Amino acid sequence: MTEERVTRTVDDHGNTHTTHTVSHSDANGGGGAKWAFLIILVIALAVGAYFVTQTSNAEIARDNAIGDAATQVGEAAGQVGDAAQDAANNVGEATAETADQVSGE
Image (cartoon, rainbow, N blue to C red; front, side, top):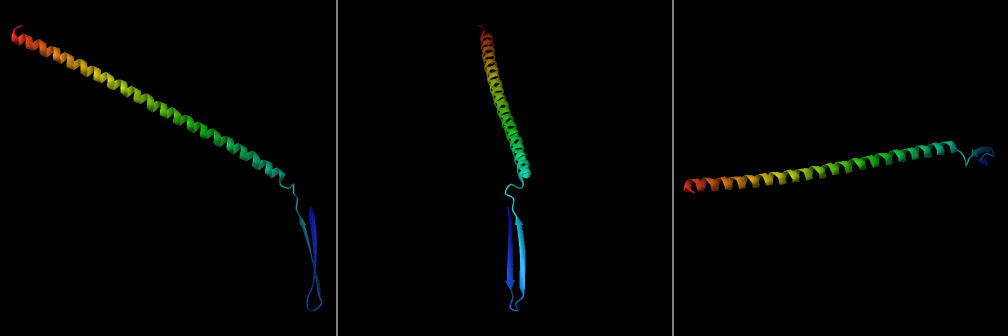
């Protein structure tokens, strides 16, 4: 849309001054730039979503690894406890045998 404005002014001495102003406003202007911006925005959002999902997957893998390690530590602690119990039983049996030998049975 083109708009033309003519302004005429008369000063105190009777001189007339005319100003012509022409303005062009294109409502559909910049269409290519708008599309380029939208395409860049969509690509940026897609890349951002990809990195968010990758970060989430890495956190899940880390949490699973920590859980597995805790399970293995628990199992190892159980094995140590069983070994200690077996050792205590063996010491108890050995002590009983030694006591029996000392007492002459």
